[in-house]
Length: 294
Image 1 (cartoon, rainbow, N blue to C red):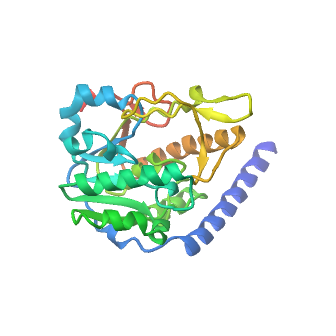
Image 2: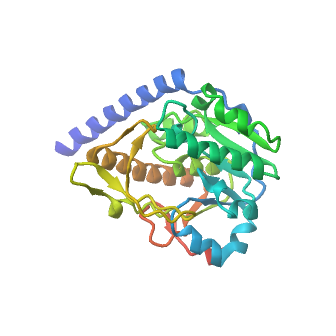
Image 3: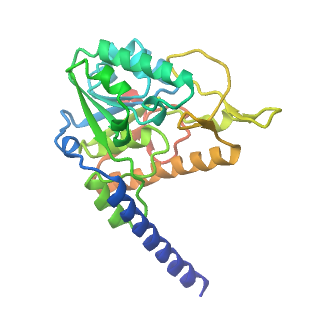
């Protein structure tokens, strides 16, 4: 009796989630014709996160990485590896990169990033950003200076509900699993380029061991990247405007790790293998391998 009630309750939960997701798609999702037209040029894509482990992996496996189609994310263009690896795809979804009503240091950092992308990119590249970025012209004015860059707008609409319903919307690029960090849309993009293998590097995601609360009840963490050496703790921000409380941080992280399992399920439906080659990564959704195997 208890099991039957649980199954019925779960079914109604999925129905409710599906209904809400459909409403979100109707009001939030936009046409993504340009995204549909992009084709992968190889059977394997390597996605580079910006975790601290990436530096060592690139130093010892640069040729393994270089000979593949590459997706990079966020502030990767600030590193010397950007012009060495010449990624074909670049994903940046953080709202604080595009908005103007954010903390001043976010505007300064994003301007540096966009200038680097515009000045360094001497090859053809797809630059994926959320539809909401269209409302803000500062970044567009900088990026548009380089004709090698094709801007691709994507739907970050979070989709939940029945698996067949979710996969239908995923396949039509109308939404994705909750995109709580840039790796989720990056993997989603790779899956919809219909390659055979996706390899992840630099996706440490080891924030849990870096979180602490100071004497003023501020939840802080050491957000380490492969391209910098800063050792100062900072807060988790929401849209570059305010900082999250500890329970909000943990909820966000929980949903992000759940999204990886949903992506893994989606990858199996498309018969695409995802391999996590990041040593010590906290992501528990994908099969582990060593980058030297590729």
